[in-house]
Length: 442
Image (tube, rainbow, N blue to C red; front, side, top):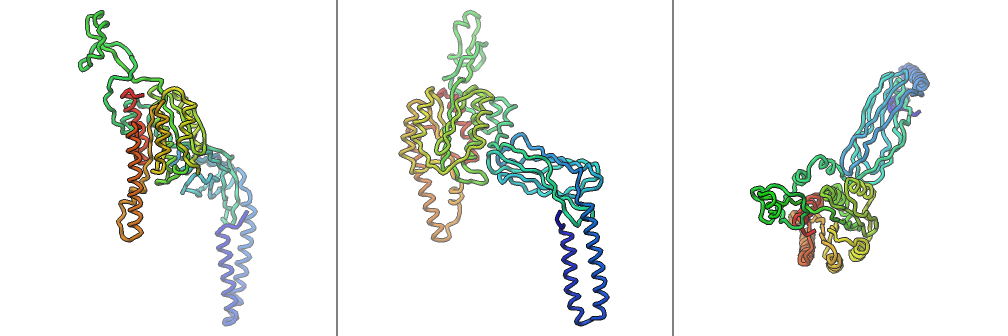
């Protein structure tokens, strides 16, 4: 046990009174004697009360607690950690409850002030917001239990140690699960383009409908049925999409609370889920540090596999070697696929990036998804007030112009581009994937 703030304040007041009495002896010795007697009496009463309170309050038997964590935590999303407390003892308990949560989480609600009557159980909790993906380790609950008169505090450890996985923001995927493919696209704000009628799989024959093109009419079936019969198509399935994810130092750029790498992972998972629902297989290859690979997989198991493979994946400080990444992907991926390179391009990458993209384009359809640094756009909006701000403005404009020239070079080599702010990358990926699929280019 340790003294409570209340006991420390009482002792501080007693010490201050002793100093006053020492000064009073010089000026009013006859009064000081009587006050000193009262002071000693009060100090004795305080000591006796502290002793009795220590004896009666040193046991908090009957107090128990249990923490209930969410099944999984999502990066940047506040979620409730539920706590159940029970007082099976014979005296009321007033306590301050805290938790040994990991540094990767953030909360502003602890400690909690709680009062429990004998035999009472309550449910409480606090909200945590993960700031980093990976495995979050929780220690035991900590309770500072006050003695009956509040002069002492007894520390009690409750519950057990637990852990929870912090995933990329998968709540967007949960929002799409109950929707159809078209509803999912509208939910994401994606504009659907009219299909060309090429690159589609035959689905079934049906009666001709007003608006069907002549190319859809099956004349042999129409002759047998003696009425017009049209072929109905569906988008091709069993295609493969490979995400080539940059784990290098440039993806560590921070825009807001999340890094470019975390934004890229969120966009990757949402677009992968849309592709899987279309019957395609989705895989992953990382480069620049972590060489993690997930072979193309279909169905709900595919998205679960991706989630469990990337939840503890982080960007490092390595250089992004696009050429080595392209060679490794070509050695592993024989079937033609849509390769989506997620990165943060700079103008100094032009030669290496163009060579890697040309190498990949011989066998695959290549898309480069560039995360634009919004901090640079905000810098251009700042007023120019002095020489230093003029230099910053000039350097920023020069950097953006050189970056724009690199993107124009990629377009000239028939590379599909998605260049947008990090928080909008999921929409750009899904919209571009849908446009490519419906155009038959896959």
